[in-house]
Amino acid sequence: MSAAEKIKKLFVKSNVTVRAEVDDRIMDTILRAFEKSKNKESAFVPNIGRIIMKSSFTKLAAAAAIIIAAVIGIVLFEKSSKPAWAIEQTIDILKNYNAIHFSGTTLDEQGKEVSFEAWARANKEQTGSDNFRLKTETGEIFLVAEHSCYRYDPQTQTVNITEGYGQAMGMWPGAKFLESMKEKVLDWQESYATDPATGRERVYVTCSTPAGPDPRSLWFEVDVESKLVISIKQWENMKREGRPSFYAQSITYLADLPDEMFHFETPEGAKTIVQLPGQMDELQDPNAGMQVGNMTEEQAAQEIARRYWQAIVDKDWDTVALLRPITTAEGWKKKYNRNFEKIVEIGQPYQEDGCKLGKIVPCMIKVENNEPQKVNIIVLFREINGQRTCVIAGTTWGSE
Image (cartoon, rainbow, N blue to C red; front, top):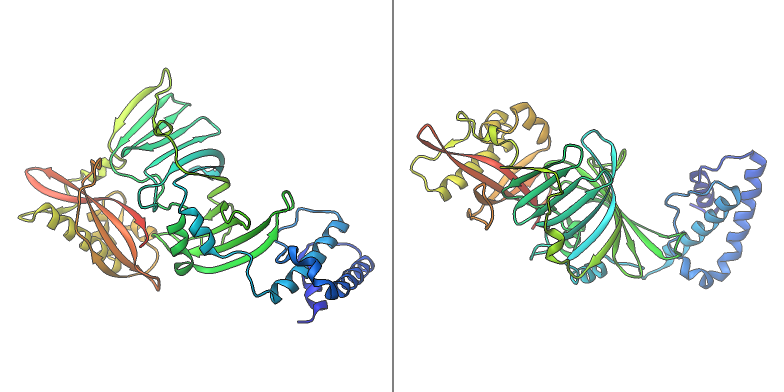
């Protein structure tokens, strides 16, 4: 493609619509500027990679100036042998941070956009977070600490305390996450631009990920100078369609956060309700689960995990609903709508400190054409009508 064709293509993408004769004059101006720039490439080195992402300018002159800068940026970026950023640089820096403060928007259950502010502290492995605090614009508070979850609803003046196992963030946006991301995600794309507000160079990365049972796609922004990820968007689909379900517009990295940040104080006048995790009624269904018989708890936990995953591989949704009765067979069919190829490994069950639900079984499952993924199965043991049985109480997804 010639330089003129590239410029015309960018001009069309700018969405600037004027009269044909004005279009011709602007194209002539752009091409003349481009010809002059050929012999002065070194003067434009700081603008390498200034690619149009999304222009908020509406004035014709501003749009034309951006197109010129983009053309020069594209030409120089294609000729440059030294990238402005590499993900390995961000990985090295993120290892020094164990906490983050971030703010942005998320979608509630009705699909309404809600602003929030949150703080999180990484676990020892920097793979997830068991300490998390979030406050929304409506005054709601969500806090996870010491294997308990606190939810405060200012409308009803109620605090619901759920006791049991549960990570607040199963995906920690740190070094290990990025380290494995590029190898496992699909459609990894990088583009470069200059933030018009600060003049600092940015890298924009888009990708889609098959991690977990639901398809998702991501967009994140990296500051080239600091090498840190400064904003993240996530969609519940593979093509970044519609409004993001999560958008961290601002991220601040911290060495740590004090324990007091994750201490919950019940607001004055609020009533407190202590409960076990949701769907406990369904988990106590005497017709659900698996008979333990003469097996030890470790043996039974491994066996029910094996049966559960094999039923998903076989698309035997009735058995899945029997072993994990929090929804129907049709519900599981919709939930696990991708191909689970095989069970790679069912690990040794263990009891985690503070987990009141039951034993945790680490599993490795291969989904479609991707690398095996780690999933922790939580097994709840029950005694109903004198019979010892167990059910799948929950799962947490991660990556190796």
